[in-house]
Length: 579
Image 1 (cartoon, rainbow, N blue to C red):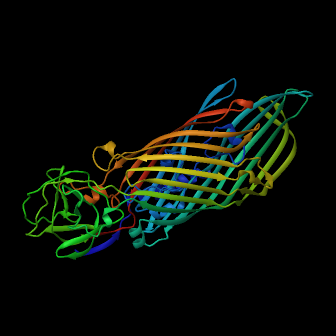
Image 2: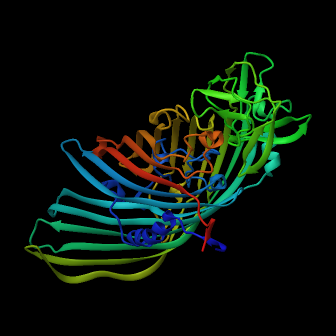
């Protein structure tokens, strides 16, 4: 039997190869994600750039990066974040809206549900990542009827209908700019990235002018706008740490166990250590940046001295018979290192620490700054314009003459520049606070040289994420999220610039956990999941309102639910098999 190497495609990749073309084709046809009468103006109702996890935190994410542990997410709000990908990540999302429209004298409710996004993130190198996907950029969907009394004509009915929108297929890359050794030594990290966005789609608008007098011809105007061109996004992220990191203390001895010099009755246990040198059979080690720690547990002493080949991660070992205890060894010999897991055994002269309390090391505070910039672009497009007079014969329109007929007229859509800045503060795999600000000069928007009559927009977002723990019951490893959003939109109607405000809630629910042996606790796998496949269901809910009932406008009160699926996997690995 000869041994051979074979590349085995994981199930997630096989499924993606099947569903991605089908989902991409669905975007080629307009999805009606909007039912807002305000989508009549500009390019329609602009969609957020984030995924389900961003929705739950008010859309914030410019400074957000993946932790060194799973699960990994794709953060398309800033392409510099792709450099933090550790495993292949697939994101899928569905969106459901329920909106109540209110005027001064009426209310009505509309619902719509549709597919929202698909994204794939691939780590090419430990310092370099790639992402691609497709999602909506803007949506149009409205049906409006108004009536006016003209002095010389009488009653005139105006009907406005529209559907369609623009989609965005993106591909981007992000890379770390600082060396690994420098980042580990200083706790700083600098990344940069870009997205190339192919924006495409069609917006259809129909207007009817219907006169009450039978002596007047009614008028129908059809406009179809198409856009198909590439726009660019650029981003940077800078991360640094503040706080004492005991892992950088060169006096840490005995594998991953360290006696606190200030409190002799405590011991700090590290779950991921790297051995620097051996001096008199004592290992001097320091933590790597992605090191994590054990929960506080009692230390058990007095085990037999026989060699145990199952000891993992330096000299710290969880007792398989008693999960609430841990054995710490004073003198270990490391036999081999496989995938950064230390397999060790005790020497005959190994001694044990006295029974002491294990103290949980406090991790440093992570600070992050994110910047994004989208330069103003002229997107190539075209439009059709057809205006006709007709007489209504029941439900049939009998056309009499054509007023205007323009087909496939080339035009440029001038999309204004956008700048975003964000900050983050938190502790890895514990809590995170995000804050973003976005500004875009929509007053400079034109299509075919005609100004769009829009105003500059500003948005502020605030988000929070909390995870109770890494071990324990199921709800301790759930990530809980909430956020706030304030958006001064690009619409200025009847002298009122419309404002949108929303509050969001969400949770990341694990659906697959790390594969850990029951009999021997692999400390690094238990605490550091970057080597495991890990998937989540992200549920996000946002409640908010936009507009007002003053000046004859419409107030929208909405509830929005985003259901996202995050799948972590490892692709393109070689597996050995025997013939």
